[in-house]
Image 1 (tube, rainbow, N blue to C red):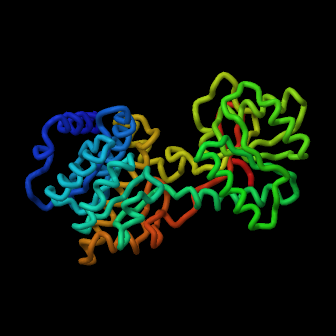
Image 2 (cartoon, rainbow, N blue to C red):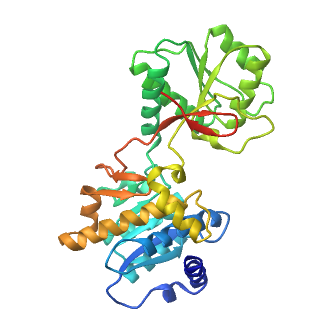
Image 3 (cartoon, rainbow, N blue to C red):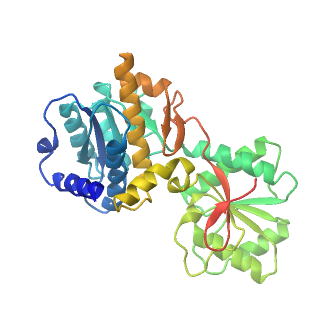
Length: 365
């Protein structure tokens, strides 16, 4: 197939030195794509570049689009090398980066040249960004954890306005911070948990924790923890014939362990990209090219759509690409995207899902 042939050619070109991957000067629109193409995250990097490449071949633009695809090696050294290559190639905008180390090293170099970055994977501002005197030119398709907690608080306050609920965490930094942020959001709406608790993760039997929840009178519980723990808690509740609704975040999407989640377990998360109605053309293009439409493939497609639209508008309006990213709205495989003053997408993609025994499906809020 034509698309498959193009993809094979693209990946073969990555085996040559960086300088050889830079096309000759011309009128084409050059967009940088940074991804880990070697090492343990190479599969994710390939998903990203699959989507990015197909977006350039299907873009409705009169100007040829050339993706400059560089292996950032998921490292600081690789990120810096990628940035230097993009600058030499004269790219208008850079997309990608799945690893914080690579993005952190690339941003100062790209920022000096006013070359913006659109990343589909890194949600939190890093140390270099927080220390910068001026905001660095990075735009994110993921929301930071505090925005996730705000969305969870809104959803749970609506669900639990007349329920006795608990908030628990597994003691990890991620689990503790998530549970605390969700609790803060709910309490700001005038609701109080009947119990907050840190539990011991990884136990096959969570009977003692469930007994504690039952004594507190909780019928609902938010868990800042992993899928296996949520499954173990549900199993212990079933053994005690104790009705308990469990709610978690996107960690519940992990592969099931020996014990699966209970039906009707709830999850607050963004929809998987390939399931969105707006993603249908991207999914069709990926399947036609015999590439999987999962993981970072659709986000990779969407980030190139944003880059192409931003660069095209900048050319038409005779202004920097950075300005168009800050002011324009973009039609993408992830839906309509607009960035706020901090460089995060301005909409709220988080929704409530229910486990039907085999997969998570949208739930009524």
